[in-house]
Image (tube, rainbow, N blue to C red; front, side, top):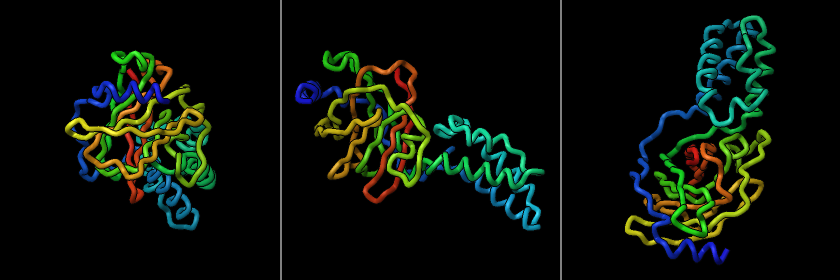
Length: 248
């Protein structure tokens, strides 16, 4: 790790990236949230219909919303339980729909939220000999952040630190990582160690990283071009956000 740290702190350009600071404007519901809301609405309508309060229109609308959101929700279509629920027809098989949607929601876990804005971009470190064969990222966020989790764009990464299970994932095929570099608007920076376990990177920051900082990290070996990654952010107050990007 000492060699990695030395390579990071010499060229200040490692943490330099040009993009606008993330806005703290209140975001819309994420695809994760839309999917879960749709399935919960359909399940609730199916239960009400079984009790004699016909709500088949609300059921159909819930399933429509869920099917529209599913392709855009992180890792949703990797779940066989979710696939089965989205194929369900509730008009004649209400009890089956309730079972299938419940299983899908349990498998999916906690939906990703955007309580504050977050933005991440892929980084290429070809200009640094120590990191020429590494991938990496730089990120900005719209709130102070005390934890960053980086992994494959699947439900395992999405559910890290949440009160639920997760779909099995092989994680990212990485074996090494640099220190995380946190830089301010005038180029000053600090560095800190992160943890790597089962293809997941977790960076905990004490004190929290202020919202006007840029977060940068490198990890290797270099991932194939087009690999999709999920970066989760958590504030000291427990608010959450995320960004998804592909390597280049």
